Image (tube, rainbow, N blue to C red; front, side, top):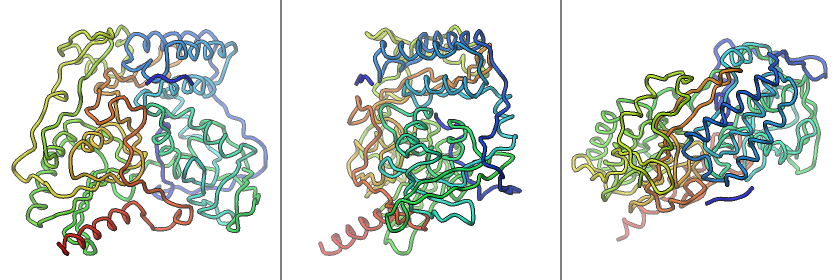
Length: 491
């Protein structure tokens, strides 16, 4: 498991859904100066030491993917960089790169609340392109200016002198993901999330020099003037603000498409019961469960769903562990009272020095008998399938009759950190550290995997499909359903 070797600030964004958003054309060609709070060496070093002590005391997966010697070296290297006063954003870059190396997608550091408000409200000069990531390369997905020669589907080779591989690799170093996989990181770079991540990592310019491959495959260059915006766009889900979408396409016989955007809905049990009752009434034989972009939520919601579709007994985790019962730094937690509910649980010592937590996720559950679905299931995934959603896919793959289509999940197949997530305010600089207290050893087929759940049928969009209203993953699911229906009709 061991190998030697940011989360984006607010995730995926979409300019087209902003009420009152009017981009402006920037003028001039100079790098834009950035006013920011300046932190002293003493402040920064004190908070790095505070964060290091907190992580070493209580983080459940600090050395899961990289040996202690390497993690210690990362801490020391970061500390040595803090030998001069820095603007807060520069300090955040040092801290974010350090936190990202832990490879726990739930462990994230943000600038202080005051800085986030400032960054969100100030005038910003952004790159007028959004991207898609295909096989580690950047392709234009949208062009946010009318006079650009570069078009959707064209490959980006460099931006302001930074080659695409260096550009993507640098941004990935600031986006925490699970294990060794880049799937979750790339999901946060996709589309307009690229603009925000580029701004936080590289800063801003009045113009952007783009090198790209044109439609004939020839190298071309264009200078694009920046777009000036006053506020970051509000995040928008893909096409709906509702947690669920359910449809019965006429083109696919006996098929239901059940898209679940989040497992954070506390009324999930009612929705599932109604949906599966209808599946039984409609005599559905093919269920497409679309979990693309589902960042997780409540294990109770995923467990409830599994009881309708599992064909044998199951459990979500082999065990759940933590480092300590009551961390010493909890007085700095934003939601201290809620977080301290973890002290009411039952714990047993493990050979590795951690504590095993007693909970119902490691207990076997039986499928429901009422409204139970036992026909074919097609699960659609991508790098945005994370946390509880990815855990659901990992457990579901151990069940018969399930086909996973799409891309590697962003969440790890073997384990996930989470349970209780505290927001810790670093005392000297007020940077915000999101801290998971538990690690769940997922009851999957590959419990020691350092990567996401791999699809049975991999499907990746090609550059020609970018910017078009084409869904190759859903199309592949439809193709498999029709093939199966035709084959069964002949038997």
